[in-house]
Image (cartoon, rainbow, N blue to C red; front, side, top):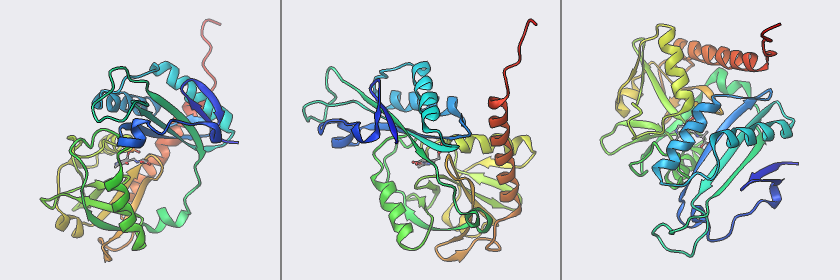
Length: 294
Ligand code: PDD
C-alpha cells in the first residue's frame, strides 16, 4: 500500500486530500520536489531540501515544518515503502482560501510527500540513447523555482512524446537552448561540455550540480555557457540529466543524428562517474557508523 504524509499525518495515499480551493489547484501556486532513493538511501537529499526552501522563498510560501522534520518524514516514507528504488514526491502550496488572486492574509499551507516505486528504465535507453524534439520555451521567467505551474513543460513534453521522442528540448526567442521539459540538457563539441548557466532561466538541477562537480574533478572541460539550436544540431554528443534518469545520452534531435548518432565517449564517461558516485553515496550511508571512544 502506498503511503502519503500530509500535513503531519501518515495515511494511505488514497486517503490523502486537499480541498478544491487549494491554491496549487486553482493557480498552480505551489512548489514540488522529486528525490530518488536507492536501497533506502536518498540521493542528494540536502541539495533537494535546500532547493525546496529556496523555491518556497521564491513564491513567499511559508514553511510549515523545519528541514529536520521534513528529513525525518522522508526517511520514514523510505522505510515504509520497503522498496529498493523509489522516488519521493513532495508538494507545498499556500493552501486553501476563498478564490482571489492576491495571497490570503493567513495562509494555511498544504504540504504532502509520498513515495513511489521508481521503475528501472529499459537498459537500451541508456545504451542506445534517446530522441528529442525541439520546442519553444514558453515558460515564465522564474524558472529557478521548482513550481507546480508546469503547463508549458507538459505541452512541450507531449509534443515530443507524440513524435516518439523521449524529451522536448526548449529554446527561447533568441534561439538559445535552455533545457529539457523535465531535465537539464548538455552538448559536447570538440571535447568541451556545455550547459546553459543556472542564471534563473533554467531549473538548476541537483543532478546537474553533481555532474558539473564530477566533470571538473575529472579534468573535463565543462562550461556553463549558452548555445544556440544550430550549435546543438552540430554537436558531437548530447545528453540529459535529472534525478530519475541520471545521465541519458541523446542521439537524435528533430529526426537528425547528433554526432555519430550513438552515445558519445564523454557522455559515457559522465554516466560512469555518476553511477560510481551514486554507489559511493549508498555505500557511505549504509556503512555501520564508526564507534568512537572504545
Ligand atoms: N524534473 N529541469 C526541469 C525543468 C526539471 O523538471 C527537472 C527535474 C530538472 C532536473 O533537476 P534534478 O536534477 O534536480 O532532478 C531540470 C523532475 C525529475 C520532475 O519534474 O519529475
